[in-house]
Amino acid sequence: MASAKTVYIGIIGAGGVGKCFINQLAQLAVRRPAPKLVLCYIATSKKSLYHADYKPIDIASSVHELTTASVGAPPALPELVKYLSSVPAGAKSILIDNTSSQDVAESYPLFLRKGVSVITANKKAFSDSYQLWQDIFSAAAESGAKVYHESSCGAGLPVISTINELVATGDEVTRIEGVFSGTMSFLFNSFAPTEGSGGKWSAEVKKAKELGYTEPDPRDDLNGLDVARKLTILARLAGLKVESPTSFPVESLIPKELESVASGDEFLEKLPEFDAQMEEVKTTAEKEGKVVRFVGSIDVPAGKVKVGLEKFDRSHPIAALKGSDNIISFYTKRYGSNPLIIQGAGAGGEVTAMGVTGDLLKVLSQI
Ligand SMILES: NC(=O)c1ccc[n+]([C@@H]2O[C@H](COP(=O)([O-])OP(=O)(O)OC[C@H]3O[C@@H](n4cnc5c(N)ncnc54)[C@H](OP(=O)(O)O)[C@@H]3O)[C@@H](O)[C@H]2O)c1
Image (tube, rainbow, N blue to C red; front, side, top):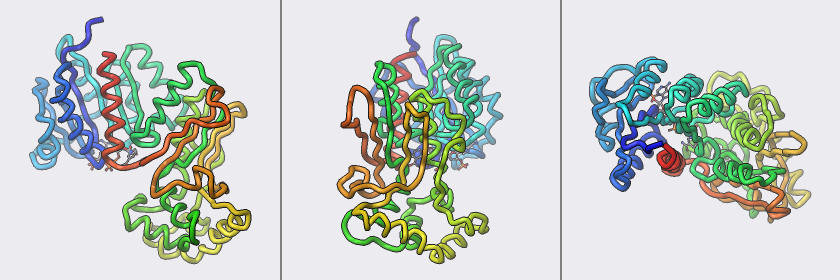
């Protein structure tokens, strides 16, 4: 099969990750002139920029143009499938999804079936129903289109590519364990540090929100679902048929009484009333010479996945994590009792976009 001379790129999402990706794409298009990378579509939830004749959009100024020009609303997703799958003869096309939209995620099989490759930082498609997971990979296999999602777990850290290579080369992954959330990492590294005593739980949550480490409503981090989604993806790649991110035990750090308060602000206001609960968790660990951390683990032979609080010796790599870093340990037959460990920033626009750009390079080398 001759490789494509021109690759048309459609981007959905121009937020924190999307903007960084577009900058990286502009540099890549200069550094790597072949195949020719043509940005033909860019959209947010309310606006879209594209030309029916696939005239290139200037990559570097695309976000500015999208936000300032008077452009229309995005077309319905099936229309976008039609547009990206009808690029000029001999060319290929790629959809880059930098949103967290469920609707966009659910449309991947449509794109893939029509030969449009998909690259995404969006966790939703790979951590939702097992049926969607199967639809995505069978659509790709049917058409030969590629699908990559490195940044769906651990941002730009090479987590997905590592597990895929371990499995593809015939290693046996037995256990995966780690801190998968930058927010949880930051919270516990300051609430229960390995040196000193740390602050009160509610004060640390408030500080994390002020520093921009949490979602606008911190309950969206504290419910554990984000970590559960990442574990679902990894467990499936390790060969487990995990039905959904709610099909295994996930410990929520939201006190029952505050689950239904109306807003994130009201939640933060009332959280100090529950500090004693988390203080007890911390002191119980301290009495054993340990610290508490919010982790996810997958026991592959037992088919068990769980997310929640666990105690670790102060010298354990998970306890010694700094700032908002992630750490992911792969225990495998080949690596024996010393796991393969990946550690570093698990969030941030530039590093997450790097995962997307890396995926783009992989797709370009294959189409
Ligand atoms: N930020 C990180 O550190 C990080 C790390 C790892 C993974 N990720 C993942 O990367 C993705 C993007 O994150 P982000 O931080 O860039 O989010 P963000 O700043 O909220 O940006 C999201 C972008 O997607 C657009 N969008 C949302 N729904 C859409 C829809 N249905 N159709 C078209 N556009 C839509 C938004 O447009 P409007 O502004 O018009 O709504 C916005 O431009 C998410 O899936 C996130 O989980 C992020």
